[in-house]
Image (tube, rainbow, N blue to C red):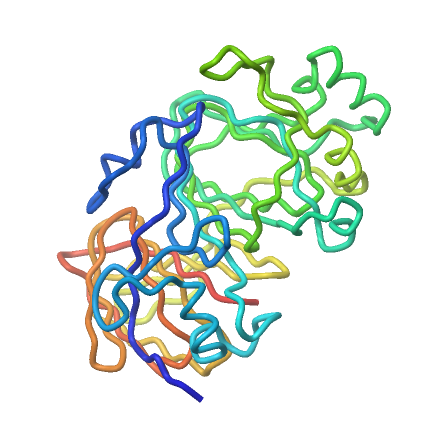
Length: 327
């Protein structure tokens, strides 16, 4: 089996969106960011946009190519497919509201020939009145929601959740949702680019035309039995010296933890899963297989599953990280 055994940093793939803002362009080591920019795909092997290694041995190689070449050495044996990177990591800058939308889930994706997509949001920053919408109000069924879409009142049928920095929310496939204005979000999702737009707030694009809706496919993709989701915050679990680990969210697809690191720490790997790192604050050095990379606030790093062990060293007094592993 081919071995990779080194940390990887990638050049993001950006998306220009009518609801996007300027926050991503202001982040460290960003170039050629469109305006407005709604999404930065931080780690992606999806055909719609695969990120490429920024520096080191594999410079210019896409994550898709790495997954095909190294398979479980990169991804881990817990992945559903040995040569397909299973998750996609994004930063979302919502200066305006995103559309009311839904993604298919594993059970109903075949009805629309879509890709299943469950996701998690971690709020990096939020305006004082920021909110997200998740799930439908009690008593809303296909008929009443379709009528609300037609008469422009779909938002009245959704649960509104005020958010602040540090809030996390799981959005399973089949749940109707939208992100409100003033939210900067880190998203972890199944590797999918299937979104069915149900309602777009009666908005028009730069040419004065409304964006395409996908109401029929969207209604087929809604799981009407899903409960109303609730916000989560990191729950401290263990301390290793001066470092503190917290659980954020566990889903059927991945597990997200938060680490406040004040001194060097070694983290073992057993080949089951990669670790995807995202810096919430500060800067950190990651060493694996004798190779060291450094990344800063609002940027990402991928440690392959065959790394055996890697070390984290904060640059300065303290760094906060999100660490995602396959479930």
